[in-house]
Image 1: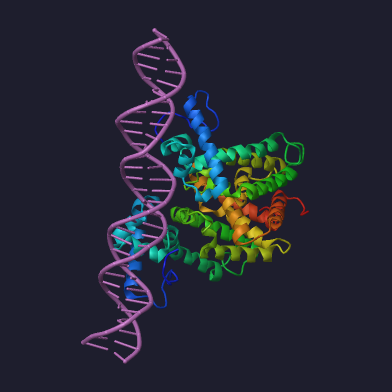
Image 2: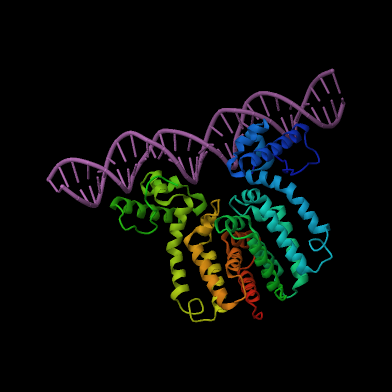
Length: 204
Length: 204
DNA sequence: ACGTGAACCGGACTGTGGTCCGGTTGCTCG
DNA sequence: CGAGCAACCGGACCACAGTCCGGTTCACGT
């Protein structure tokens, strides 16, 4: 990717020089501002660097590439949702039956897509299946696979988790919502039905 | 996209000037050659133009963008498969029960992904859900929706078709096969099971 | 306080996808 | 057969993602 032994700290590194930390904060703030102002797709990396008062090289060393920067922003927003999955109230968090948690998860991601769709779309647009290797996706995969194992023991949870995550991709969602003008409730109901059928529960 | 009233003829236009047709053939041939020789990702549009003995502008006017060119190549390969879906032997073609046809379709696409994976991957890598608007995808969608309506009347076939197509994306396939080293048989079995469960048939 | 070197910085540089427009070519119709 | 014009051609051009490297700055040990 880039030169240098820095392991690309996403939030805060154990030993990060003060100027580096300051610049990272500046870059994140600038990106957030410009994205909100002009739309994610219309902001170039150079513009972010300029807004942050920093050289382009600094942005790329910090975040690797465009997708990396976008993922860093995403992490902040997504962390709350992940927290809710692990420690939140049922049905999203533990305590509810696996089927209910799966459905709540799907609904949660769909809402997330609706809210941060533009950023999520930018995050997965960067060839070479980078997105599948990312923390957020890995977390979702593990979560869904776990719930599937509990809800439908006979199933190949590894593959099915991927298959259940695929329809929740930002690109498809954006397409269904904008180009096909599909109501969000249809998507949510469709996904819920999908999960019910896969797990083997009667359609609501 | 580009200037000019030409409606981007993908194979042969009603009224296309002789030189234009000749150039398109040259470009397609050059692309095919270079893709096979160096790998799709490693060939630039300029290289294709050069190999074809043509200016870069000509390539872009003909095919719109990189994805357009790749799709044009794809169309040739994919047409045979589409033909088999419409008029081929069961279980892929008509005559077999919808469930069997859905399973055969999935297996067919997976094989297609295995064979032309590189090209299919390049075809869907080009932001702004261009891929979902393309002929091949539209055809698959219609096909799957039709089979779903026949196999499971209560279902929201429109949404479910999208959800069943999503796990067959080239990016996911490439990731599962290369990064996760998942055997193709596991994918095929997993998908078959998915379809059975969604349609409501007993697991084989 | 100060020397040292690793980490960091910035902006010039490269390669590529995509656009533009002045000049050219091949159809069509008189 | 010739003229006219729309369609077409090519390569210069632009914007942007991502790289590189010489100069700078911070942290730490003395």
